[in-house]
Image 1 (cartoon, rainbow, N blue to C red):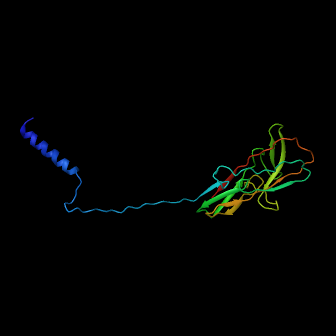
Image 2 (spheres, rainbow, N blue to C red; image 1 turned 120 degrees about the vertical axis):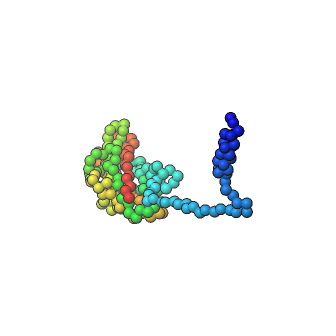
Image 3 (tube, rainbow, N blue to C red; image 1 turned 180 degrees about the vertical axis):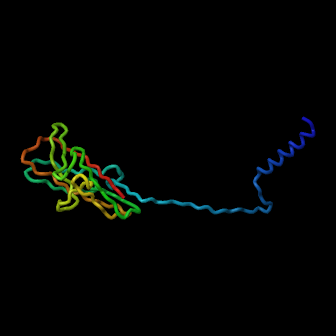
Length: 185
């Protein structure tokens, strides 16, 4: 390397090194710039039983039944079948119930609880009202979806259930069904 090519290279390196250094004032000035912080809350809902388990509503239980000579009526409660919902930014929501795991098609004549050991069924229904006159469905399965006014507080949506009377005495055992609630907003 010759002396003629050394100095321009050193000078070039010094210039680029100085360009990379932060520019400061010898007077100790401070620079400030504002920036914006945002959060956007979208419309949404949380479903659950009202406790730490947001994946369940608990079980709607007709209890221990010794006779079905008359229908058995029950009302849900928190952690025992009631739908617990909390929404933000959604003034109106629709709650729909499917037909259940053991019923296909129209639910107007009842949903079915299955005794998996015997294959036998008990018929029951879920209603929106205490008079048990409005079948709770999804609008296309023989029942009506329920429309509610939502707000930002935790709301309990009560289910009114009826286990139908039966002229024949069913086989002893556990009878179950699983319903799916769908929230649309």
